[in-house]
Length: 184
Image (cartoon, rainbow, N blue to C red; front, side, top):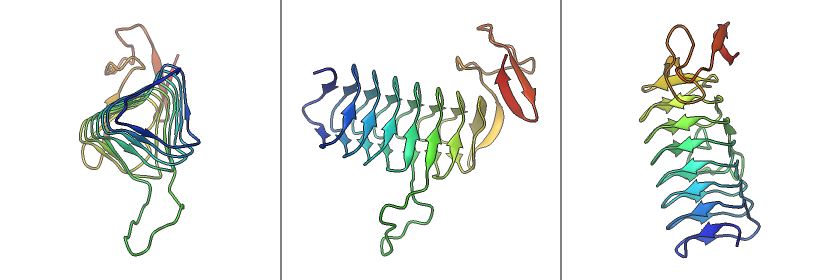
């Protein structure tokens, strides 16, 4: 086998799992899910029907990724982070497959116990603080915290918080135009 699945986990039919991916204790990968190469899914992770997860994604313990959510390459999902996929859930009135789309772009990191309310995009290399609740789109390289999450700064692709000079210790340089940060 090109990937590892712990014996306590379930992988439904019609699932694609990339080479080098490791799926640990008590996970469930549902029908139609696609996981890229070299992913790591911690204990008790649920990947819903038709979810797409890129390569080199780290999903820590107790995370459920529901249908309608897409995660690009090199994303980190901290322990017990939360995703939703219905904007107005009701037990008596199920939506039957109509889910709000959520996109987590390449290199983003979601802190422990953070929540991403469905229908939003978390930008490339953005950093969501532990416990934050994302209720609107998050720009590339943004650092957000709080409930609801508000931008409190910028972060480098490497994860370091950027000073006002927008030059990182790692050597990367950024510029800001119209509240959009780009790497030079």
